[in-house]
Length: 364
Image (cartoon, rainbow, N blue to C red; front, side):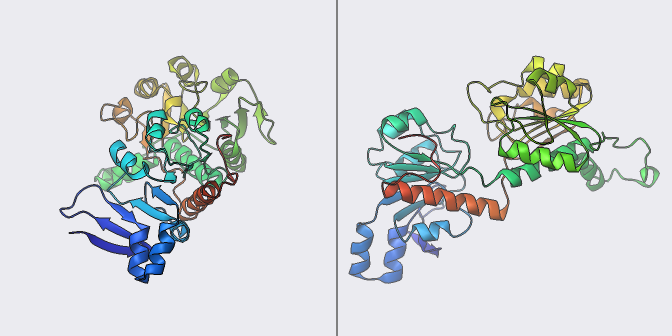
């Protein structure tokens, strides 16, 4: 028996028995709403789109008026087999950064005309293979910079002042009468007057630099494109690493940036420095950072992204002191995620109509 739940004009279909996997199909919702042969005929003429997760806002409701939607409703991201089952007969794919779209996958999806990722980064998609097959790939740049910058600076402040550890201390009963004010308790490092090194001066990096100036920080910047930014002193990479009290990372993951912050680089950071990564996990040698936290060479660190996501149980950062770990939530505000969904749908509809994508990541 199948159970249907009508949501934003799309029917949610859950297999009997509580299976992890579930798809919802817009055509079924349309039939349930309209109950007419004309509606069935109209829907059969619409392109088929597979969406790998429900999205915030009303973007999918609008998409359902122009496409037959199949939306993954499982508990979390679809497994590779579920992703393929959903997309192999689809004209369009709306995916997330958790969905691996490689050449083998594309080979088995012969009808696919457009891929739209609800993300800025597209390292989960084989752009070369997609371009070779004439499939445009869309992404959602320019909408999450301010939100991610807010979160990056929140992590910087929290790591500098031991906010998470102090909260845990209170909740676990450590704040006793004898330690109601401890002159040596939770001593952090000052942010005001410190030097911030911003690695990557794209939209997020520039937004972080603007916040840092508001805190009275000196800001050094490095980017592969050698960007000049008002209020930011452009320096070479090695100089930034060696002179900064705080280092924040805002780079795409590419062959050139993978492993950029390696063991030797971490050891060249100032004693007592703090590292923040809200970019991509593969940029950093996580074991080297954990070792420098244990030795005291680094005063703190904060990671929102990791080489393997979710974080592996044996990741050394989990046992390191003075580190904050969050589950890739840099862009997680209501308005930003809804706007990302809007852009993803705009890209998808343009591709289905044979038009250039408003925000294309390749040149197919």
